[in-house]
Image 1 (tube, rainbow, N blue to C red):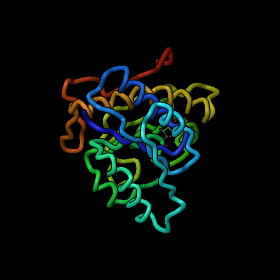
Image 2 (image 1 turned 90 degrees about the vertical axis):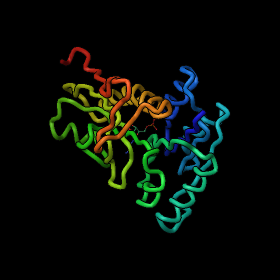
Image 3 (image 1 turned 120 degrees about the vertical axis):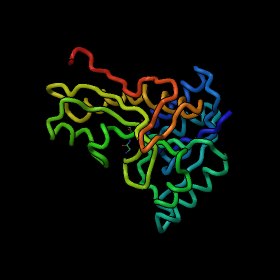
Image 4 (image 1 turned 30 degrees about the horizontal axis):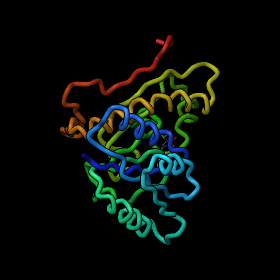
Length: 214
Ligand code: GAR
């Protein structure tokens, strides 16, 4: 049984999707803890109600990024996880932290990486006139929103979309692809070959929700 620790900063809907699918599908894993960098992260309430251990490591309490990263690493290590999942975790993690968890640290980013790393992805996609948007689950490397891609989702950008409408369409697909990626990891079905992630069983690493748009 593998142990998963999930890091959140807010709502935690991706964390919820992972917790639900882990239980419903009987993964060989359990969510051992949910850790937030904000005490008021709403997702903590859901986790606690499910009997999952919760912890808060407030980034504001630390003078440096390294001190925060070290405290966060200690809180994570207390649960001896096989996998650390960043699910809407909005702090940049330092190189030492990332190296320490290399190969067992996943992130989801609401864009088709390598397009639009960083913030305000949906507005930037709209401003660029993109006709497709989506989300990416990737292994974390020290470069921000960068690393071997496990799975991507694509959705259409529709006439009249604003950033909120596009974000909602993308988020619905995040709830599909992130649990899938985590399940593959805990089942040992992922290999990284020359920076490219291969799924052992040849499962589709693309989730297209294009509706009538294409
Ligand atoms: C999600 O859209 C996730 O992709 C994004 O924050 C949202 C969190 O929602 N993450 C990032 O922007 C990380 N760079 P959630 O808290 O409901 O899962």
